[in-house]
Image (tube, rainbow, N blue to C red; front, side, top):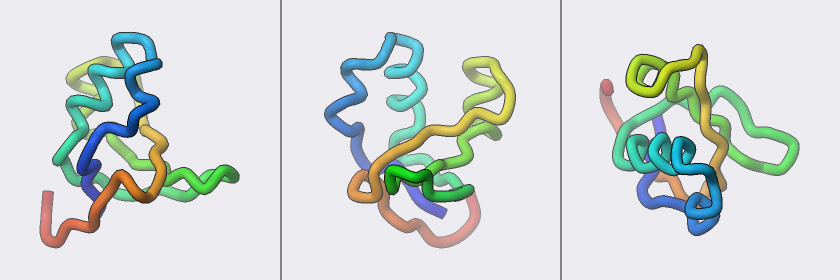
Amino acid sequence: MLSLRVLPPWVDRLPEEGREVFRFCVCRAFSVTETDHNGLLILDVSADVDTMFGGYMNDIRVEPEYVVKVEGDR
């Protein structure tokens, strides 16, 4: 499990809904589903984000330097 430790600087260029999702995800633990072709980690945020913001099977993509490994259960 990884936790988004800080907001990446580029988040402020996202639409407001995207910024809200990223802010919500800071300091929460998520599983990595894969790494995309740009080296971004794909975090499965669906368990928390789907109910809070809508959608289905949501994920976020973030550079490895913005996450930290966390131990234990969510």
